Length: 377
Image 1 (cartoon, rainbow, N blue to C red):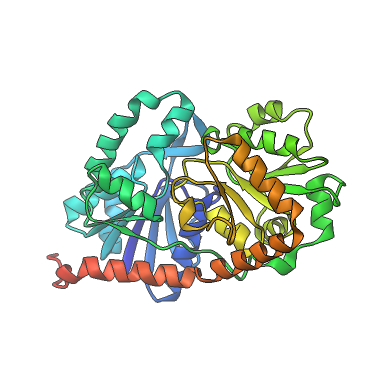
Image 2 (image 1 turned 90 degrees about the vertical axis):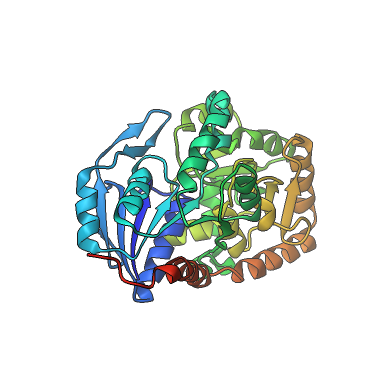
């Protein structure tokens, strides 16, 4: 298959969407497919054999790490040269609208996928009154697709309830070869804890954005004697968070990648994830693959991953004391913590990227089945 992939974010940006797309592109290319990626220009022209067509953009006002790249006629020329069998628009919002337009104009089957719960983000940026309008815009865009994919059952249900049609589940995936429990190291504990490796070590990995509600970890940290907190990642809310956590044993680590990131997961005692806006929460799967028990809000797609008391703990997102109680319990019971670690790893092993991409290819083929006759030149 020849697949034109439109995405609002790609390398060198680091986030869960980019992680999924990286592995998806790699496995599609391995399967013999050809992928052409349209994304905001990040300086790359190729990834794992897939050509990248970068479109210049401007930083998003509320989120400077992200760029708004507007569609342009050259995209149509690239598509006519590439002759894709299918267009896949990932989170179509700005550049992705070009994918919707050219799919309709050129008669190319369209798949869209939903990864960022934008309507819920709005309230964290003081724009909650726009949520109904945004749902209408999302419905208009996504309903042009022959298939809309979500990464959790909760998002399948929510999109369906808001009038988005032809919705199905794109199963989760994680790199179980990269993230492994044996990568735990004293050296990484020393680094993350700033020299206090014997102290309880709490970990958060992800964007430092307002929508992640990282400030809600502070009461948990303060309730645990001698605990240390490592925040891995970066984002527009970092300065505010540095002020919020001032005076606590919190280390702003910045980005980690590859084996360093895997070692960070494996070396921590607990992964704390308070976000209530997750469509899936890929970092949770990475933590679990590394054998790090997760303590997460019972919200969005998270219950698809974490089974309370089996491979981690879920807490009521409205109850601060719930997160504190779960963390204290986890740290106090060594044998139970080891059982959770083992169960977390076993759960992650069920969800390799090869299987997730094979499922995606089946979805593509099902969409293409009615289009088996060649298109007119």
